[in-house]
Amino acid sequence: MKRKKMMFVLLFIGSLFIWADTARFNDMGFSPNGLQYLFGQYGELLQTDGSTKGYAEFFAVDTAKNEYIKDGVFKINASYKTSGMSGESVFDELVAGKDSFISSYNIPAESNSVVLYHVSSNIEFTDFGTVGFLSSDKIDRDAVSSPIYKDVVEFRDFTNPSTDEVETYKVRLNEFVEGKGKNAESSFYLIVEQRTSSGKKRNFLAGNPKLKRKGVTGYRLNRVLRDSSGKTLVFVIEKQVEESFGPSVRFMVETVRLSD
Image (cartoon, rainbow, N blue to C red; front, side, top):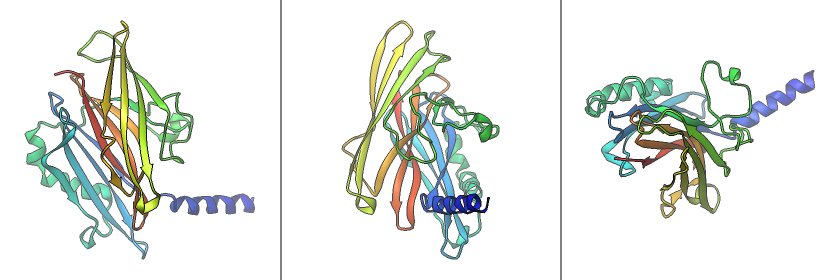
């Protein structure tokens, strides 16, 4: 029994060094026409004395152009002002201060995103409490232990209001990594295949394989969201980033406009 307890402690301590910081993703939602999408991330940075400093960011995306809206990036960095604050509290403060910007795009108070896919580990749904996760049977590795997936993710959209057909999607993430650690440079892109129940097929590309990101050593498809009109898809990507304080996880998105 003592040996098992010791092994558990060692495994737990070891896991702390796998990720120095993992941000939490906030799906803020779409504008009514799906042309704008807002998302955020927040967390706490652990200090050498054991204390923490909260940080928060949110981003406004032009989904047709697949790029940030001009002046649409907002941040509160970890500093002495956020010492002891949770990332969620810092995020709430950030959003409250930009209420007029958010309201200008008619982003709802509660996210209106439709979740088509969410990566999940193989543990039981009850272990996540009340949170529901959609998973692909193409992925059989644990979502916590591995930051990168190379599998094809497959899911269906049964309720797209813009069509009477069931849409089946297959998504493959292709990444390119050169170097290791802080010296790494990487890029990725997504190949998205859409097939309808009547047999129609369309292909989309999301991401830019020519865009090199320094210090990023891996990517993972975290979830796929759709706007309520059925015209826009958002692919939420986790980035494994090598920071000065250790490896961390940050979020970004790629967008595909299905129709105008």
